[in-house]
Length: 393
Image 1 (cartoon, helix red, strand yellow):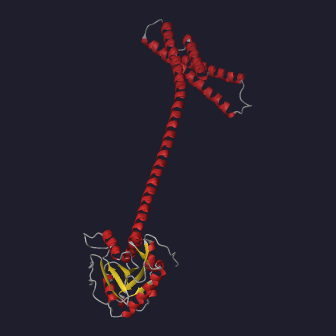
Image 2: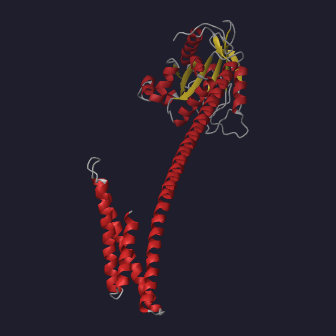
Image 3: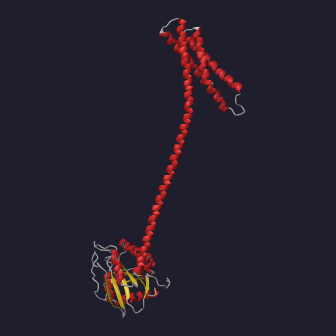
């Protein structure tokens, strides 16, 4: 991969005669300190096999390796440290200051024997913290090479898609290292050759603390933008729900208003009809009751009650008969087309028939209930005709 040769606040170029600065990165147990000791062929960093981090703070050591001054910065486990008082961010910035003005190469230490979720999590943290630009300065150093068996390193990398993808993003730069054989200087020579080649490819630029801070600022801006986006989407959802609710409530309110308006329009009409029927029935009931008392020339309450019941029944029969004819007339009007509707004369005849039927029904009731008295029968017939007229007109 070709890179532009320009100077930026995060990438510093220095002369060839200056120290080569190497930054060791890795989780607890990966063999960072042992790798640094193997490079110098001496016990310069505290190293021992342990489940908890032995290295608690960053340590730098400078010595001559293959006739060249090399400074190696050993670091603690920034991701999985078990120390309660450990400040990861502060110690990480201190590590970059120890290799000021910057690191030529970041040696990312991974154990060759395993690549678990912890290693993947550490790689994800490394990319997030240092930024994609740091991969340009990264060389993956596989330690514990003594534990490899039949397969080659390339085959082991290809067998793990996640690891293979990360190695590809690092420009296929990796090296196999046996930390238990520090006397094997050939592996150190090959490592230094790969490091020199990487430094040359990068034009002797360095990864600096400013570059990491720039990455942090960019990540914070992205996180802020993401938070704002989520808030905006949440607010838009709330606004949409509110608008939908307002529309639904408004529609329900309008429908309720229409229903109430229709009911108000119907109620007076039906109330008026019912009241009209009551007036007719009560009028003829009282009149018929009075006539019954007058006819018998008596003030006996039973005669009034009998007449009252006869008149009321006749008027009620007239109302029912009139409503029957009214429904028949309405049915014909509905079934007929605009050219076949009954004319006014026919409608009047049907209405008159309703009144006559009401009169007949009232007269029959008056004859049987009124004791076959002609005045009562006639009055009952008149009550039936009045009820039919009230119903059909």
